[in-house]
Image (cartoon, rainbow, N blue to C red; front, top):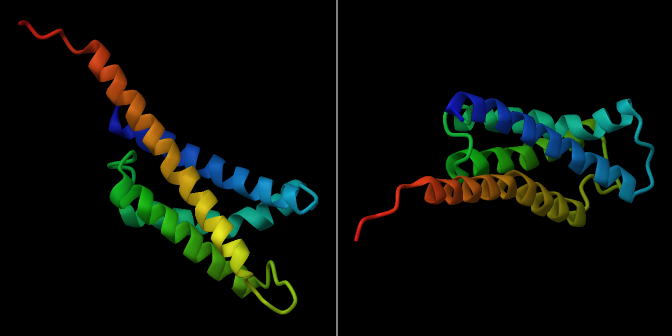
Length: 137
């Protein structure tokens, strides 16, 4: 698979996983999962991810942890939380960002955005070993 193909595939996988994160969050709180409600929850994180994807040059090295995965992950969380605060999303008892939400979002998005890259890299390495010609003794 070419780097360009991986770049597009990585973008799609990241976006799908961020939407899954929003869907899980909404479902765990018993909130409706209409398309508009899901978009309202997901777009702050998608905006952060887009900034991270561009900033890290992810299209050129989509499977790398650094800078691609880490920058995309950190900016997804940071910008996503900033947008949520700016738009008044998730305010609980006057607290705009409960620390438990920040911790859970950081961990889950880290596992999602870095985890699939680890699996993909492992599969690619395993396939490369299997297809490499046997060494002569």
